[in-house]
Length: 323
Image 1 (cartoon, one colour):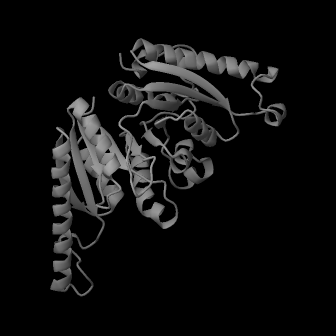
Image 2 (spheres, rainbow, N blue to C red; image 1 turned 135 degrees about the vertical axis):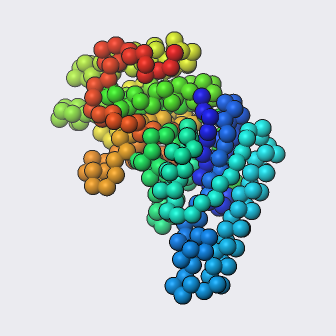
Image 3 (cartoon, helix red, strand yellow; image 1 turned 120 degrees about the vertical axis):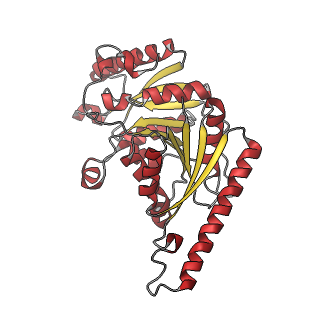
């Protein structure tokens, strides 16, 4: 279960949905919630206040710090009026992603909960980049909360009741299963294991009809694979269904399926690539993150080869899913 949940907050008010989710999970697991705000300024606490080093600049910095701390205390007090969870606050300065990553490691954070609103352009550069960095550089599960309503009345649902888990037959993809197991138990959620078949031959691309004979083998193997994993999850007390879709764009197929099924969350493991490798190979998790309109649980495991065939292809490995 979770012991420490971190919620990055920027004082904008758009983080309220993430805080609500964190408090709900914390109440059910006796976890501590840490509200963390980073002042992204080189003049934090008066250091390098300005080129001329004037006392006025240092005073402005101190005022900014005091105001941010006051807002944090007020936010924590508000949380305590609606939740029994233990809530603490921390204020730091520096590059936002770097400080958050170091903070999470230092305080043994089990889960990071952060809000995002699928913005584009300049807004995405300032907000989305923090989420992207946390996913790429930590091995802590990141729960990205996307409220389904408008900015004028943002509100997340009371629970994640329908969770879609894309699996592709690799060990990497299955690393999300223990994290989903934990969350689904807490939320009493139904899990749908999804496999996306990508047309390979000219015939398949021409007519992507699962009823045609050239899909028989692929569909059979996918059904067997998903059935084995579903069986293990069911034996651990979870409600699980399976499904298979055909599409040339994996990320779009997953997002469209989740939307049709009215899912509350997509849970996926990622290789967490950055830089040139990310541009060349792309990332299904990254593509879904920036296009899907529902919340996501994203996890980057340590030292897992992306293409390694899953033990579930031949049999279920017990240590992947909690007993």
